Image (cartoon, rainbow, N blue to C red; front, side, top):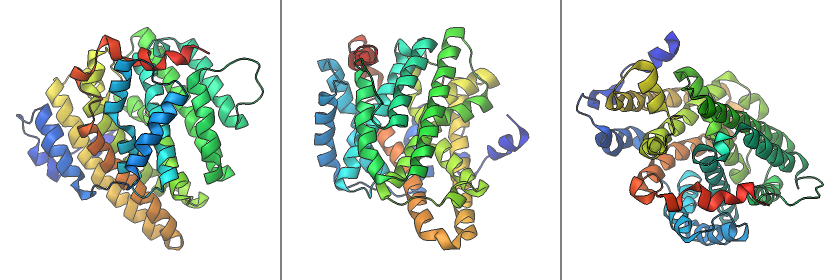
Length: 361
């Protein structure tokens, strides 16, 4: 980690609470929620409609098959996750986001926990099939059946493109491609037993978690695109990275127990523990401190962007509102969902139950 990055992790106000006896539960139940109270919780009014739609959609595409997997999937409540992260979406938009969330998380589980994530060649093949969908809109000509996860992506893309511009779609596809490269990087690390260094992990994590993709979807839901000159500006990119990091690191804290139980070490807490020689609790406190510092940085960076582009305030404010609801909603969903609780996991309800369709026609 470079000196400027280290400086960003120096104690801030919330770190006064990070005493030596601030265990994992206190960090997750008290300190982190307090730091994110700066962003009020919101909930989209169409959440129930999104739940009903999502249940039908995953059945239609065969993404969740066995009964144990259905229970695990229902406990995750991706429609509620969509409703707290995109609280101003219309009903159709929220249903679309709920489907994107289910698709992204099911795919991520297969990469992290399933056989695909330990086979770089299969990762490359699957990403190629998905790239064909995004490049050709309908997947292009084919003479063979596609895996269910690819067919589901084709449906998502058909429903997303009418809400977006060509420039947005180009950016979105680039972010999907970056996610594929990052998934391949993770798969190779698993095969070789490599624990990444902290700086590399932080950079790659934004793509392995598809958080840039999710931030892009703010514009699709709001039907308001960030002007190209604003999006390309370093100040906007700094604010975007801060929001992405808050989301990714928060997710790492809540998913730590589940991931370690499955032998997964692509998690910021595990990377800090390995690289810095910290204890588990020291690593947790370090990541909580990093998140609280990054929240402060985000607020500073958001203000700089709004001051720099007074002519685009209306569009950018809506985009930043989406980032804020993403940071807060991700915390609330992570704390609420049973997805990460070990008692909800078993050999009978792992990713292979609902994403064996990845390897099948």
